[in-house]
Length: 288
Length: 288
Image (tube, rainbow over the protein chains, first blue to last red):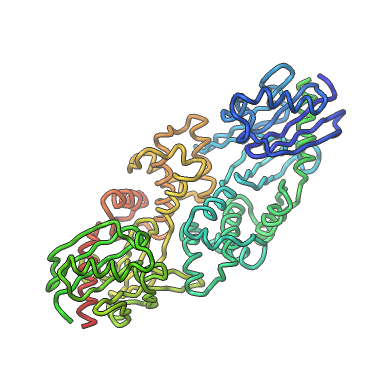
């Protein structure tokens, strides 16, 4: 295969394309044409347009574009997963266009899947942005927690942390008080602390009584709820003394770092775009 | 006051009115004219119409009609609360019309409120439907757990269990699989068991991977999620060996009884309408 290819991190909401030449990003472009914005029959034309804009050549796509809601279902490789096992299972989608499979895990009766995150996770380790034995976290709508040992993705878990925050803000009775921006201040820390006591559904209900009885200002409700959810997410995965490598944008990364620090662990920020580029380039080389 | 009065259990969605003569229900009527269906300025006319239908006379209202979203704010009496403390704090709403206050609690920095449930809870104890020392549960949109000692409502907690189920079914990504009716079968029991392992946001996300990887049929998703939520609710409040008096309709009562039994405790069903009538009659007598 060519040392020049077009890589696309194609999620549900957004899409980021890279022209990669000899492992270096020659050009990148981000837009809101996630799979949710592309009608089922339009992927061939979308890919052709993207390819033309980037000067043609082979393409390697990753993310939800390879799901049953995307272009074609690229399947899953099971844990333990590596860039080699991903590269060995690329799905051919069209002439010169391949899609990276997702990763699945089944352990103790718990099933989980990821699609797109695996390239970033294993790319981070390959790039040396995280060690070969690491706990990695990708916050977001569905927050991924991945355990890598000896460079191998051994297991992972997903929490609907971001989706739950949006559900509560947009549709719950307490949502009316959740309009203020979230910050990692005292209310957020109080939420993290309360998360440690469990019983999330009671803690969430408590937002309105705390306001009615004058114990908390409504302006702090969103930060408190964010602390409750992120705190619960972190407490389920992180022990005091742990080091967590976090792949996130600045805003969400700050909140997770605060919650991780509050329970006595350490967060290290990892550049998720750099991790993706290294991961997808390595998959491309391995498949060549 | 008269031995004949009209009592109304006036909630957010529904309203049940009783004509009570010498402690006996002479007539009752239920409709969907909860406070959400009554425009703010219409309560005087609504109450007058209800009073006319029931042959006139004094009225005692309880529930959300006494909230800041209802007719007038009837305030709260703090825990420890009794029918006496409620009767001593009735709010006069109009000529011959009173509203029962709600109950508030603040303990260990946790605030909670109820409005309407207190009449049922303390009524159940007064009627002998539950003992003077009891743990009582009122499942619903917002599930109440009340601890009564020596006939006194000492403390309570509320979980947004029913609201969360509706949020997930109607607005979450996993909601698409939650259309089937909920039953207290194997999937529900699996949800209760999973609730014991904590990390609710990951357990909820797991619904879709379990379907994608063939571990659970979509037809079982709603029962599993119900088990997760109700199981978490029960586990936060009930210890093995406990006896819980449950005030619920048959469907929800069956689910809570199953979860309570699964953790090794015992559920006893209490007739919530009978409890309300005894409670509101006693408040009426005490206030006379």
